[in-house]
Structures are given as C-alpha cells and as structure tokens.
Image: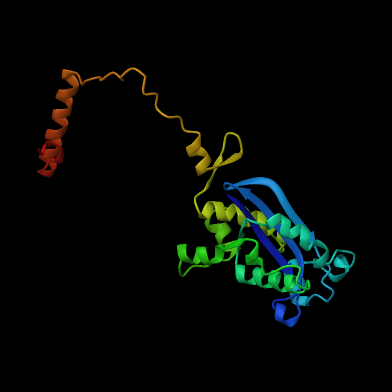
Length: 234
C-alpha cells in the first residue's frame, strides 16, 4: 500500500478569493513504513501573501520571487501522488486549494480524486477522540511525537510530523530503542516464525509433593481469610 502524507502552505485561507499554494510537502509511506522519498516545492503564487499568513508560516513574497509556478510543477506532482492514498490533516482545505490550482491548467488535469484517494486525519482523530483538541500540535502531545522544531508551519516538516502522528494514531509503528529504528506492526507480524511441526514434544514437568503441599496451604489460607476460594471450586 502506497500512501503520501501531504501538506500545503498558502497565501491565505480561501482559494475562492484568489489565494494560491506557495509550498507543497509530501512524504511517502509504503506498507506503512517511511521510504525516505519525498516531494517538496516552493511556488511563486503570482500574488501577494496575506500578512496573517506570513505570521503562520514565515514565507515571504521576496523569498518566492524566483520560484516556479504551480503550472511548472504540476506534472511532477501528479506523477508523485498518482495512485496513492493521500493522508492530509484537515483534508478539505488542502484538497480545495489543489483542485483550484489544477482547474487553472486549461483542462490538462481533472480534480485530485481522479488520481488518488484521500484520508483526512482530522476526521479520524475526531472519531477517536471526540470532544478533545485534535490539531496537529495537540495530537503530537497526545501521541508523544516530537514537534519541537515546529516554531512556524512548513509543509514538508508538517508532513513529516503528520506521518509520525498518523502511524502512532493508527497503531502501526513502534520504536526499537536498541537500534533507534522503526518497524510497522505488519512487518513485525511478517517476521514471526511459524512453529516447527516436526519438533519433539515439549516435556511436561509436574509439581513435586512439596510444591503441591505448599499450594494447598496457600489455598487454605485464602479460603480462611475470605471465606471463599475460587480455585477450589469444581
């Protein structure tokens, strides 16, 4: 199973008001394990970034001046995510912006769901933790995922953090403290060895007379103290 954990940063909140994507970050998981492959791109939005948005992500108009436009990278992006399941926190926001960008390409591409499916981790978190805070920062705290580097939002960093949160939230990853590596639950099950049916029967070691006597004394003490001993019932 191939999944792409995706996040975007934008010039503002509403694509209907002409706001655009300025950063895309993607992290690849295969069979719930990070592969090390990622896609990351800053974009020239051809408009000014709202001051409030700059306070959130720290990306400035000057920084984006020489970056490619979405139309320049659309083919590479679609090739990277095609056929995968996208894992996105608050997916309607990012999907809405991506669909808006794709719609500007004069019919070259259809909407995002033509190429991949989408899993919304915010909706999933609300199902698992109703009535609680389910922001990415709140989930990091709940699942003990390190987000100490997240002073500002950034698409690739947030995608990497979301990948850790998603795997922890869905019970698919554990840390191996001796080696510092990670392993999916499915992979651990696959490495379990089947019992050899040709092996010799295991020996049966019966309790000695002294052990049986000590056991009876213990049951008698339990019966005396409580007036009832479950282990003596037939």
